[in-house]
Length: 301
Image 1: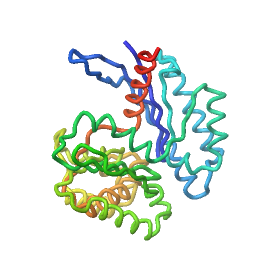
Image 2: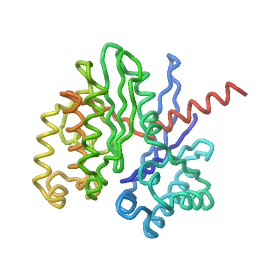
Image 3: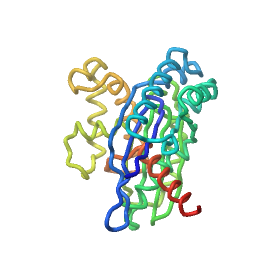
Image 4: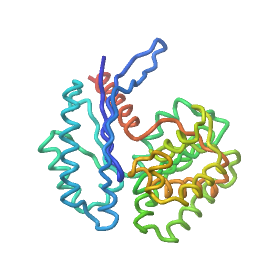
């Protein structure tokens, strides 16, 4: 049985996903999650305000990477079966190059800083191939701490994918200006014009948490009006009250309100009434991408 792993270093948290590759009878491949370990590094709080990652956060990154390396060894995952990617905060940090070099030198883990476009592709390409009906248009919305990735499909083809520097931590840090919102609004309205009955598909920790709070059945969508209600409701409480009332972690309780603001705006501007929330994320995409790479290596050799 082959084991693969992915590390996703986001603006709010880092995640290590370890999966087992299981071939099925109909020549499909399943990825069985063995472990998922999330550490709230919150790099965006440094980067989006000061332009770099502080020494304290660098120490946290190193501790996390040492722990991840130990887990990889414990689960018998070689480094050749690992893909590690960093997104918005590391893209913007002035000292990301030296941190990546340090992580490589001390742990052997090679981190790749990926663009917003690549991030969107990794999250959705496998999900799209498996699940889309060609009769519909689909807008994939991935909201992170530093950016929002939008990917739009119609008639089974990619229409656009675009990354915007509007994220939950940037909003909390007052780094998003009115013209950023205007650019997003104009782009969405223009790019989705002429398409009816667009279906939204959401990914990211916040929309998954909202879905679980909603107590909706797996596979059922969330209505735009429900998201608006949650936005008003959560916004009326302090972070401490959100932790207490909704049993949220503190590192989720602060970002969930700006995340709702982004989802609501994107859906309104694209005239979308409901959003589906499959459990997909960057780490899943990295694992599946790595599997394809390894498979192609075997074929070509």
